[in-house]
Image (cartoon, rainbow, N blue to C red; front, side, top):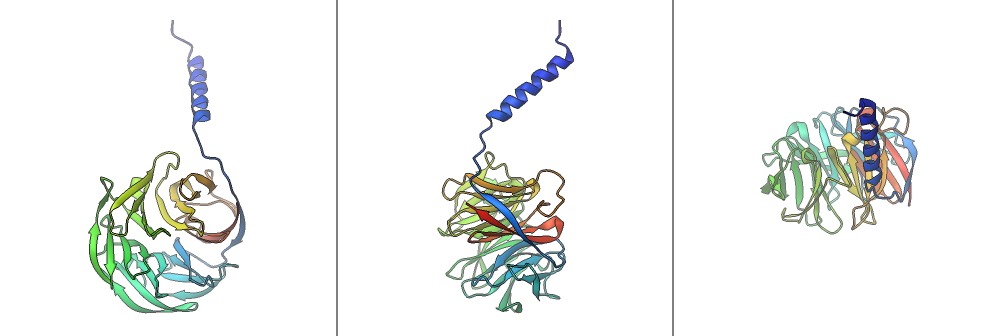
Length: 298
């Protein structure tokens, strides 16, 4: 005699709940508080960065085809860089010389700006065979690294010239790599979005490790940042969250997230960009077309 369908449903539900209860999730060891929301108009803002002095916040405003310059405290727009020159910019990064490097995706190049406060002047462009570059990182020796998102690769630049390229890491083809970030220890972190993982490379683009699967369960991660204590912040786009990972262990310390309809002042909608300084985090809440800042209590 077969069991009644209702009893099968109950048995399945009980097993599912037991499995979920047994799933190991790292304990949250920090709290966040929303402190400011941008007042300007943005169109799918992507990554963002502070200048070395922390005076201004620079935002790659993809749909606005420019870099917006904000007061980092109030999030009011105080300047615009690259209007009429950039097309669908994705990433912004300062190099050791204090120049602003922009992943000028729609123009298939890296645009280099001399920054003057809330303004800037285009002084150089790098191409290197790029197709829709969406990430850029700079090393102290002048070396730079770009994600060639359109072709699925990483390109190393010296003096503005492409000198090396890779298209796979850890035995996997890179799929839509978005960000590349130089960590404090000199290694490189590639956000391999299409493979839902973070890849660690050495300065010569040799594979070292990958973060993927449990416990992070990334879903199209996009851009990353690192704080003064080497904690890692990840904009995990399709999970609608920002993850903060502990130094060394990379355990999850905090998730700034929403898994319901992303409405309200503290709800994220496919965030792509994140940067940090001290106890403040700035987030590009991309599909809510705004910038948010949060205060973190450890």
